[in-house]
Length: 221
View (cartoon, rainbow, N blue to C red):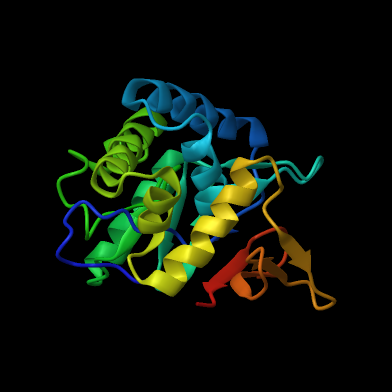
């Protein structure tokens, strides 16, 4: 994902995350869905668009039903995203990354980048609070719409101002926004690939470790 450092409020889309441990009940993800819906209403963004972005940014599949929902305790850094089972573990993981000098970390339901949004949250506790995270993302999306004048353009810029990358992402978001599932293709070796609607690979998933410990993802743009 390409970012413009000059845009202090630019939200960095995430790499898709990995499951850090055996998954807790997927119902935890309903916190993101409720927070996103409320944030959309307050910011008056296009209905459902923020949720579609959340599904692409932090969507996690229910191991029983396969339904994907945004996951609140998601972090992405150094090309790998991770689903953590608790907020406390997600916060600890971010602190560990920061302690060794990693500054570009995407967090929460909407994967807000802490380096490019240094004033977004008062604390990591706030950053992983679904309502706070979604509210910031909704305000950011609304600011992009005000600047660009169209929701597809705002969705594109949410990902990147680089034309090719942003346009492909916008097509993916548009498809999910219209009700299509996030296009994940399972590979024979156990990896999963998220594909752009027009072709090409956006994100890769692979199982990592045993006992459900991980799914590693890399951005393929």
